[in-house]
Image (cartoon, rainbow, N blue to C red; front, side):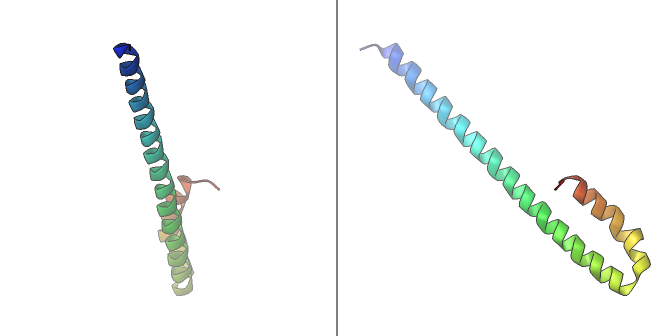
Length: 76
């Protein structure tokens, strides 16, 4: 039996496992961040509607700059 062959195979398998694990973690993080931004965007819409009901001039001065910053991160 060739010890070097088994060592190379085990190192290769470990690298494949950790690479797959890191890609899975990165993808999960991106999905989680996207969901968080969706919720923030929904909350911004609710706040915008409430401010518009109270005073329409507040919408352009308070919510519009904040809402534009949040939606810049994610284009539909």
